Image 1: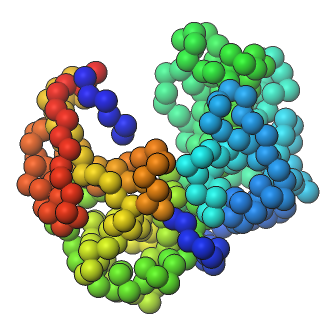
Image 2 (image 1 turned 30 degrees about the horizontal axis):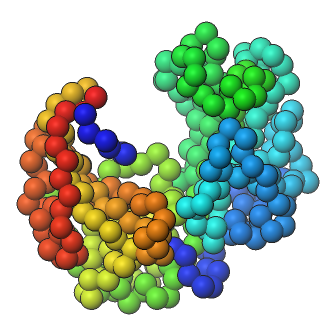
Length: 324
């Protein structure tokens, strides 16, 4: 079995105006007086934080609001953060809950009844152990989920064990997808970027806007979705969509990793990732950026892994075997 796991600068970045579809969600957050555009470090200084009792690594910062996001919330929207969180970015996920009833069905029904008039019908989730509904606003997302007790395996959710009342709550997650403009120090790197000819496009991910994500400057030429390296080979650029990119400075990158999955639950697959440490601090736990993956042949990315290795002057770490 393979042990797989699928930027900060000195100045606070300027923020970019919204897109039309995301504005639907942002307008509601603005009406409620929620400071979702601000860097997390400023929100923590303003509102404080407290430990997340169910996790030793996490803290919770609860925002203040002048109007409830929906009626019946146990608390205003909050975000969680840990030692590896880039606090110079806005929160990319806010959560709040409805816990009015010991019956999960009532909490879910009340939450959906409040969300539907604001955002429409949404899409019903398909997971076997939850009941959920999701909404999409451009890159922004909203979800409401309950975990029916009869569908849960014991010991899987630490928060439910510590706080039994949460077993029947309706959990609302808000991903505003509010991202920053590309810092000036990366503009020239993007102008001179050259394509890395990957055999597959970067895989889609659940939340499009992450800690490394920026808006693509409208003044720069359009690039196709894919992977690029600046001419000085000091910046790796992953074009996610026509308007979004992930930026990874070369000094942050610690390793090129190739997983050759030879079988198991998901079949054969090749996955190429980079391990990196934010701000190049090697004492911090490494994070992972997935460059590309291909199904059907565990050796499909061998040649591309060698090219990335040569361009970044890093060896390829290979793990091989079936995935459980």
